[in-house]
Amino acid sequence: MDNYSKHEHDVLIIGAGGAGLRAAIEASAAGASVGLVSKSLLGKAHTVMAEGGMAAALSNVDERDSWKVHFADTMRGGQYLNNWRMAEIHAQEAPERVRELEAWGAVFDRTKEGKILQRNFGGHAYPRLAHVGDRTGLEMLRTLQDHGVHQGLDDYQECTITRLFKDGDRVTGAFGYDRESGHFRIFQAGAVIIATGGIGRAFKVTSNSWEGTGDGHSLGYEAGAELIDMEFIQFHPTGMVWPPSVRGLLVTEGVRGEGGALKNSEGQRFMYDDIPPLYENQTADTPEEGWRYVTGDREARRPAELLTRDHVARSIVREVKEGRGSPHGGVFLDIAWIKEKIPNAEEHIKRKLPAMYHQFMELAGIDITKEPMEVGPTTHYVMGGIRVDPESQMSTVQGLFAAGEAGAGLHGANRLGGNSLSDLLVFGKRAGEYAASFANEKGISDIDPEEIHRAEQEALDPLKRQNQSTSLNPYQLQFELQDLLQEKVGIIRKEDTLEEATKEIEGLAEKAKSVAVTGNRKFNPGWHTALDLKHLLTVAKACACSALTREESRGAHSRIDFPDKETGYWAKHTIGLRKGKDGDMEVVKTPIPEIPEKLQKIIGEQG
Image (spheres, rainbow, N blue to C red):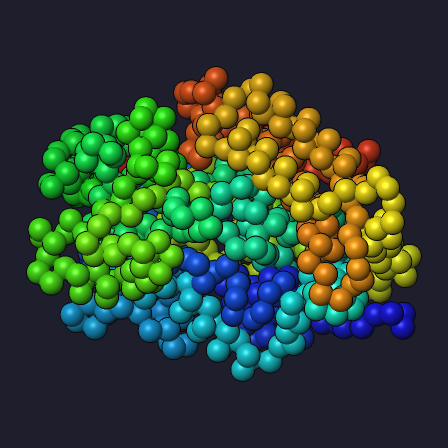
């Protein structure tokens, strides 16, 4: 044991973004000893890239909003594959979590009356997103971090977890290493919360930061947890496409929420050409008037640019493929046109979208107050993740919890913009609360020394192969995987290419056994990449297998060989993946519990 640092906590949290920090705050408040592990530096989590806002039915801008409308919007956006109980909890508790964040010091934009200001966003019936300009995620993380450090927790920065430990059916801790020194750490814990974010780095074009390599999804899967909904990858409609060095960098939906118009090379607002039948009595009026829909006794006007993200992304791909794209393979997003409607529009844009103004000015030399941006779809979010209990966020493995993007169920087939930040708050809080309770009841178990030895050998293997003639470069393998997923498991899918993808991923996994890196454990990026490969390959195979299995098009999953959305079998089942006894990935098709009558009534009333 001299080669390790050993740490003991009631609750170990892997991931220090919004979900991880909110879980840490709640677990600490319950009296638990908390260890918080971050792959990057504290405050650098990918949550800072969430720009538009957090969805909560505060009803500050439109009094007609309520948790019931929010619930119905979330279920409709998720194509009714959502875990209905998670959607209900989220809609009911999000307002309280946002007000709580405000009480902890978050500085939101304000209405004239001094209330938290809310903006329109895709798929939401009313202005619902509480925001701080276009840097809401940054303010949220700052606030949680500020509040969290005073609650009492031990943080382990720039530390990567490579394996979870188990005793029978229960998780007992984790193995990790310091990225700078290569020093190994053993974490012994009564409960473990996975809050590691997404899998975007498995794709070539992504808005995700470098940490998004699917670590938590893979760690949970290897420990015996079930993954669900991995076929549903959200490709955000608007990422930067030029210059190449910043391709994929997010362009917040807040631009469209503030009036930004999507135009093709002919200057046409093409989103009005194909409005899907989501609402009764809808009419596609002129872009200046907006898209009008009537549901029950409600009428609203929204720009067609604020349809759900999956629909907008496919519409952009259509324009590009049919030759009406921008010079660099995207379309144009124009916020400057609002000068026709708003006095002092340039100052208005700079005030409401300061990060976007500086992003385009500094990275692309474009002044968004005067000229349009070039944008195109970018891999943004995975609706899939670890199957969790909606009340407690515990997985199918005892003592293992998941929250945020690593935990699945809330979003179904497609996430509505803004639901992710309130998701972090609502279910991060619940994960911390229930994990602390579990640890208090069950205590801390021992870790088998043989398991520690295996984890160490697995981590050292790439370094041991550095003098072998058959060794492979980890970067090259990662690039091959990213190209493969972008091409064959991207926005548009079909059977033959998905079958090819699954076989090629298996081939890359076999090659990964020969990956080698030079040097030693001290700040060795090649070694880090080699260890990330296992996680990337796991989530890549999960996405391809799930996409191949679901023979329909629904939400963010689009099959050109099955273009229609089913009303039968696939409308009532989720696709799960678990590790079989032989080590292979098994597909599990699980019926979705029927929505209770009282919630069906709410959905019916809201259209």
